[in-house]
Length: 461
Image (cartoon, rainbow, N blue to C red; front, side, top):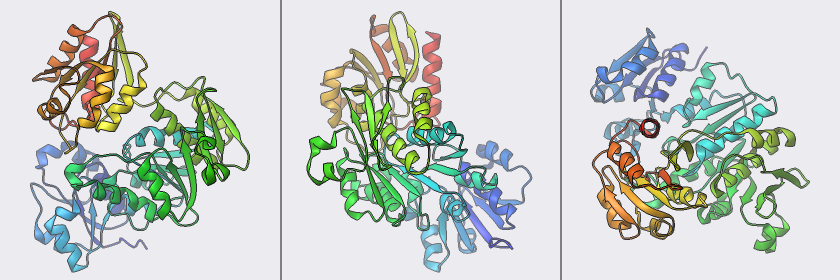
């Protein structure tokens, strides 16, 4: 008999993870209530997906009766548990409050590869999954990437491994998860509108480190100073990846190096994770930028310790196309190159994208909804790389105060104006780059809608 049969379960939020959780719990015999602050008319798509499933609903706000009457509460990632009085009341009453990811992990039979960090999570998650597929080993790829992990459980777990991208929001309620591999990309300022301080944000990311046990592989970016400190609290089997040759670092790090590093003069990656040195050539690797080489090294380490063959990994390196909205080439128009980097929603992403272009000049379109970030650190790279800065959205005034002295700057009222001005001001050989450094919710549903609209506008020029 299912442990959920007859249990009163409240799901807070009728988004993707909430709907997937409801499907699973109803199948298990639970009595499910979904509570959302939105009105029914705003939730037509998720309601259509639920169909005629036996689920109760509460629209337009939350009631104390629903929260205090539940025996289990599943919270969607967008809900801030700490600032939610009804959730705090339920917790004080002793009601378990958890997440869709934790719900799924409790039912997961396959090894879990968990990926987190500030940037590069989706690309890295997809790389790892594609490496398994390239080696004829079926793999699930999802989590914050798009498909909830509980959907994998709903599908009967058809694969040998689950590769799951986890945001800081999803990690806030992590307690029972014990990944086979935990990968950390980097840590930089992001989501400070939710966390207030970098310390709180880092603590949320560190929850993944804390649930690793001595059998977990922990893959850390040596080039990130915050992640180097993570090693001091690690209880798992440590794997490093770095753009530096370990011999240049020297000392014990060089002597006992276990992981992967990049050799620029040879344009290849050296991996030492199987007891012997392996070389992975990047001559056919299609993604550019140092950050994508870091993602690739982390993926190689994770895939290799989980049994993917060297040839399977190399085949994936040669064929991997990357993901939309991440330095995605859109078109060349009258000698001008257009790139869509809508997923760049924090300053480190913008910096990595600007550095990735060896050629200049760049016309940069930036702006959107501020996440309480400081943009001043972008000044030197903007001065070096950007000939024209076009700002749009809620944060444009703030960005202008921080960066307006480093490049010729224009503030515009609409997204359409931004793209048209970028083209009008461009000259043969210029790069027009959408790399907003902000979230999209001031004008768009998400970064994907923003990126798709950018591509539509560019293709209409």
